[in-house]
Image 1 (tube, rainbow, N blue to C red):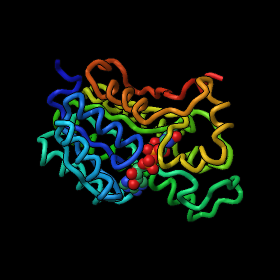
Image 2: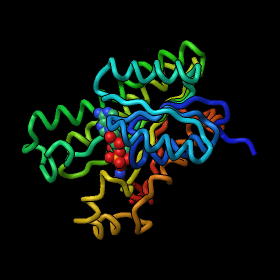
Image 3: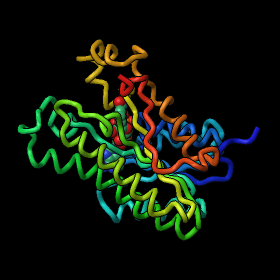
Length: 255
Ligand SMILES: NC(=O)c1ccc[n+]([C@@H]2O[C@H](COP(=O)([O-])OP(=O)(O)OC[C@H]3O[C@@H](n4cnc5c(N)ncnc54)[C@H](O)[C@@H]3O)[C@@H](O)[C@H]2O)c1
């Protein structure tokens, strides 16, 4: 049976763990050749090994999405390997606890924590889009999916830069969707709720019961449940979908 993404070439950032890893595997399952990029080279290689073991085609890339030269290299390496770039999942991101801002209300954040979080979650997505869009424009089509969050739609306490970055990712997504709609490039965002990954391990340990209680489905999401939305948005089945931000959150934002 044909895969939804047969013949397509994809790039996934943050593909070494969590949502990025599950999505890289799902894109490959649907027939895409996948460049798996991650700051942690060994993690990217582990995802590639899993894809290859399942009969897919993948290669690993490393680099920090906050550095333009590294991002340009990721896009160029994908195109050099696969000849084009049809789908891009801009997903690398960090949470407040990864910039020493865990549990901090807005006034308590340090400038350093704020800057680093915005650099990864916002500037990183823009840099990826910048280089992916140039390639997609040159080849005449493409689909981009950015990882926002329910924090791109609502406020969350003690996460000011995170919430700001994710709202901004939705803004970037809508802007690019308008700018490139006539060039057959679709740009969408996915807004996960609380998903069981390394990023949320600590939160589930300390506040798992509360988080489950706040989710109408009463459970955490799995990375694979985000991956299925990304596969759809990357595929031609989503041909009339652009500028959208889809919640995959067990009903969290319906409340
Ligand atoms: N887990 C959740 O509940 C949840 C909810 C909403 C949104 N998100 C978003 O989903 C995305 C993925 O998160 P996850 O939960 O899979 O986390 P994760 O920590 O499991 O994976 C994130 C990956 O991104 C990589 N990364 C981080 N900074 C990078 C950088 N500067 N350059 C390159 N790679 C970098 C990490 O090495 C890691 O492999 C993030 O953008 C996050 O904000 C997660």
